[in-house]
View (cartoon, rainbow, N blue to C red):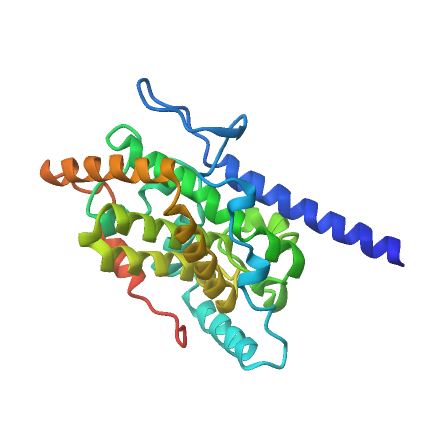
Length: 284
């Protein structure tokens, strides 16, 4: 029996690691001529700014998974049920877009909030900043994910998720805390450091990015809360990292130049705003 439990634990940990590697590989791009290459931890997988020992410990920073008889879990279930009403709406389509962490797609997720296009050609330092901070945010959630192996909403309610191709991988990957939310909240915080004038819009978009995981039926609200928690802790740790600070400084110059050039996002920002205005009843 102990052997069987051990094998299951190893299988789950392997599945979690595999899902993370898929997400990390999605960050892969080929640097354009003259653009500084992003350091890699292995071919095709970019390195974050922080070493493994520098990452915040999610086991120390997030509470244990909410018990089934707790008020937090009752709220999780209520919010999850309410989010199902947004299936096949524009908010559902936005959630599908937010689920795609591949680059260059993901780099433009905050274009409307920033009021600028974001791509490697026009803002290579900002692009690099998003790719590398992605890694730090994603990795910060791993310890708790692997320990708690929380079951996801679609596995409880047996309703569709917004990215059915991901279902098998998500079944083997713990729900708590939300890695997608950590990444989105990290990007919101990073971008406010680059362009403080857009702080409100950027953090509102970061919040919506995490809430897309509720709409997708793949995370509970407490997963989202603790994803933000880990992103905030990781962002704090980045403030003493020289490479991160150098990229922030370079990205500020790029963003200032693009604003002076009156560059505009290539997204349909009106459609995005309309989709994001569709609230999830009871979300906190």
